[in-house]
Image 1: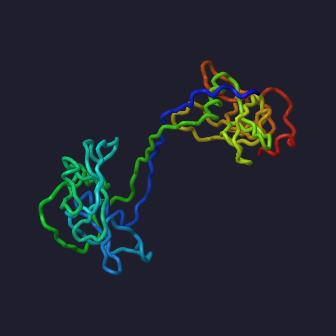
Image 2: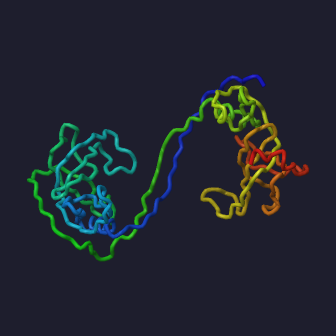
Length: 319
């Protein structure tokens, strides 16, 4: 086919978000429970250094660490960077400084927000203290932020057994990534063709293989691809799996089948859902064709064509 005019390169905002759940060992459990009780704990190494936040193993020697100590809630800024536009979920909703603070009695620095009226009010060496959150649950957010402090440094370090009532044993940390995805020219052409109920790949000028979805370059030869080739619409199931766990926000009843499908004329299998057939009747070699919903920009699923199954030798290289 003659290369089609390049459509506008697409862009779309995407969010990847999930809760990360982890259990805590005795050191981290004591540290977070201590924050809930307005106590800052560190851990002492064999050579006498006090690490805050505490870790379970010495980063220099890999020795196990269990010697907990209490340090002061005051400290000194060792370095900082101004944040003029706080983002969602950050400690403060007004401009603030990210600061590394070495608490009095500690030999390492703790990263947290420093509440200051502007960058001119922040400097390396300034004295600060912890501002505790009004409601504390046993998390790093129990330290609401640091704030300027006029007092002198005190090196008061007290041994601590790390024991508290109702200790925190696990945390759930929400992970979220907001970004803008631009698929590039090759995939923009591919998506534009899908919106017209066509599937196009790109042919490598060297090995002559047709790749779907296209990436703009041949993954085998490493050369640029720009010759568009329409493939399908029919294809062959090469491999598949049966999904038994229902995904949140996905209105598909389980069990269902997700398969790799080698479209006619393509040299790379793409994936899609198989419908219109009981899940336990899906098989390798099954001939399928796409089903489009009204207004859909991509196939909703693939259904059997009724043709005889493809011979294994015709798709074995695409497994």
